[in-house]
Amino acid sequence: MTEANNTSADYLVALGKVQRFPRKEIELCQVRNFLTSEECNRLITLIDEKRRPSDIADPNGDDYFRTSETCDLDHSNSFVAEIDERICSFADIGRQFGEPLQGQRYGVGQEFKAHTDFFDPHGQDFQKYCSVSGQRSWTFMIYLNEPDAGGATRFTHFKKSFTPETGTMLCWNNRNPDGSVNNWTLHHGMKVRKGTKYVITKWYREKPWPWNG
Image (cartoon, rainbow, N blue to C red):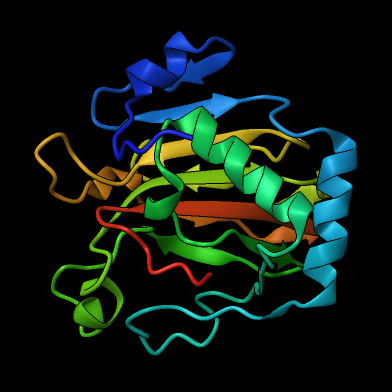
C-alpha cells in the first residue's frame, strides 16, 4: 500500500479505463465496473443493516437539504477492509489519509441538495471537522445499484449529470492546484423518483485520519 498523499487526474487516466471530464476547472473522472454486481449487493446488505439519518456540517436551516440515510461501514469486516484497500491502491493515496468508508441510501424523494464535499473554510464548524486531519482532498464515490428513475449526480456549474450505473466510480479533487478549495466541485445528489439508490463514499484528507486499531 502506498504511503503517498497525492494523486491527479492525469495519474488516474494513465491507469487505463478511466474517463476524465474535459474541463480544466476540475479534476473529475469516471471508472466503470470498479466493483462487481455481487460486491455491490454485499455492500447494500451491510448498509441496510446499520443505516441512520444523514447529517451535515454547518446546518443551514433547511431540514430537507439532505434527506438520505448513512451507514458507517465496519472496517473490522474483512470484506469492507478489502474494498477500502482497493480504493486506496487505485487512488495511490495512503490508507492513513482516508476517512472510513461510508454508505448512503436514498429512497423515493430523497436527495442531497447542491453541496461541496470540502468544508467551508469560513464555516462555523470548520475547526471541529478539520483541526486534526485538515481539509478534504479527493472524493471517490461508487454507485452500488441503478434506481428506476432519478438519483443522478449533477455538477451544477457544468450542468453535467452522471446517471447511476452499478459498480461505476466517480472521483474528483476538491481542491485547486494551489491547495485552495475548488467551488466547481459543487454537486447535487438528485432526488430518486422511483426505486432506491445506494452508494459508498471514500473521502481523503490533507493529514492522517486518527484511525482506531
